[in-house]
Image 1 (cartoon, helix red, strand yellow):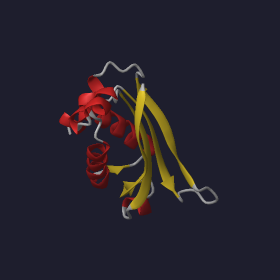
Image 2 (cartoon, rainbow, N blue to C red):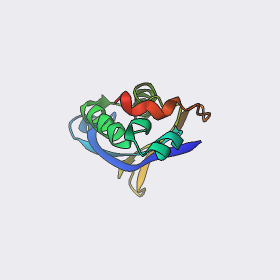
Image 3 (cartoon, rainbow, N blue to C red):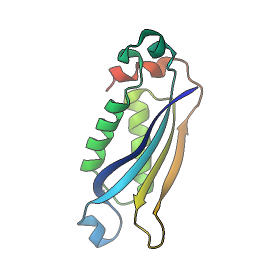
Length: 130
């Protein structure tokens, strides 16, 4: 299994349960690891056979900027479902954090894994879905 990753993707959005959080955009940070079979992309040097991390990032930025989640847990589940469905990713690990949300801590958040790490090669066609 190969991993395509995005680290510290920062996006401003409405997130939180308190009244003030519903009025102010906060920055969230994403770390995303996605299972992919990179062999065909490596052999052909062709983006059509790669998991296009730029397309994933652009889709997540658009989705999260428009969202208004109450809980980080809900946001994480929605992100995971979107990436798996739209980019044909069989397994992912996602960390969603809210930097500065807790006094005395650099950040707080959630880490989830979804799907199966077994890759059958179908994940490599994900750029066609984005």
